[in-house]
Length: 285
Ligand SMILES: [Zn+2]
Image (cartoon, rainbow, N blue to C red; front, side, top):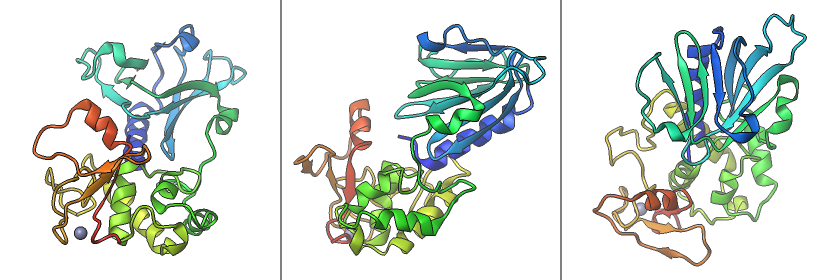
């Protein structure tokens, strides 16, 4: 599942490429939007809200003097989604059958693949389609005190679970959940009331800010493959601090164990990793 920094960077790329351009063609490859045609609409910009993307368009049809509705395309990458930008005529890097949205301009074609959410709404009502979100770690509304207050409101909740709840603070996925618990030295099942929440929130902000400009996500400061995380996807390998084998627990209750190492992971293992919690039983008591 993409973390908030990935979504933020996707929004920036779409914004920089498409803003101010006019759509020559649009193609929504899903039954509910199959007849929509945004040809002629100007792209006004793209922003991220937590892990959601909002791409805004001028009035459709064009030349309607603003009397036509201004529309917002709401998309979410969910587990496997991505937006790609292509020059006209260049080859797509994902299979065409995974494309859900194609936005064609003279200079760029934006293709949304395997998106989890695709909705088109009037811009004036776009906030209605977003779920309730806490302060956005990479948003203009970031408010650390409010994030701490929201986390603290459920004092008995396991901190790992509370970090993933986008109503507390928006932008953390499974990778940063496990890594932040390690960085704080807390077990992911520690009740929120026993965690230094201001410190946790500061680290969360710092980690996303540090990674938002690049493709590689690191919490160790090392960008080399296989060295970027303390615990995430390192089950069975020695802790980088103390040498204890890293443990993994699946989201399903009662399933815990030490994983197999030393071989390539399959897609199924990838999807398991998205629901797993990783920790060092020595450093995170
Ligand atoms: Zn350790």
